[in-house]
Image (tube, rainbow, N blue to C red; front, side, top):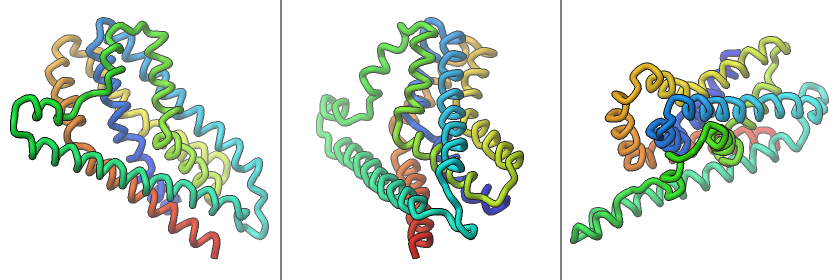
Length: 238
C-alpha cells in the first residue's frame, strides 16, 4: 500500500497542478454567473476524473491476464508510450516557457514587452458568457481531452490495478486520488461561494502567477512522471 501511494504522489500532482484547468477555472469564477458556473465546472471536472478512473479500473483487470503474478507484455509497452509522451511534453513545456522569458528579456519597447508577455488562451475570454451547461462541458472536456491530465488518470488506474490490494482497498485508493485531483478546483469554487465578489483580487493574482511562473514546475512534474513510467517499462521488459 505504501509503495503504491508513493508512486501515485507525482501522478496526483500532475493533475493538481494543471495550469490550463486552473486558468479556465479562474475565468469561470470571474464570469457573471460565478457561483453556478463554478459548481458546474467542478462537477464536470470531477466526473471527467472519476469517470476515466472508473473506466480504466474496470478495463485493466478485464484485459490484463496475469500469469504467475506477472503483468502481460502490453503493460510495460503502455508505460513506455506514456513515458515517452510525458518526457517529450516536459521538454516542450520548458522550452516554450524559456522562449517566452527570453523574448521578454530581449524586448526593447513597450509593444514588444506586451507581445512577449504571457497571455491567456483566446477562447478563455468567451467563458464569461457561458451558462452552467457549457461550463459543465468545459470542465469535463478540459480533463478528458487534455492528454496530460487524462494520461495521469490512466497511469493511476494502471498502478492501482496492478497493485497487490484487495478490491475494497483499491477503491479507497482510487477515491482518495479523485479527491486529491479535485481539490484544486473544489477549493476555489468554495472560496468564491463564500466570499463572492471579494474573491476577485485573489483570483486575478492567481491567474497572473500561473500564466507566468508554472512552466518550470509543470515541466519538472511531467519529467518525473515520465521517467518513473520509463523506469517501470524497462523493468517490465527485462
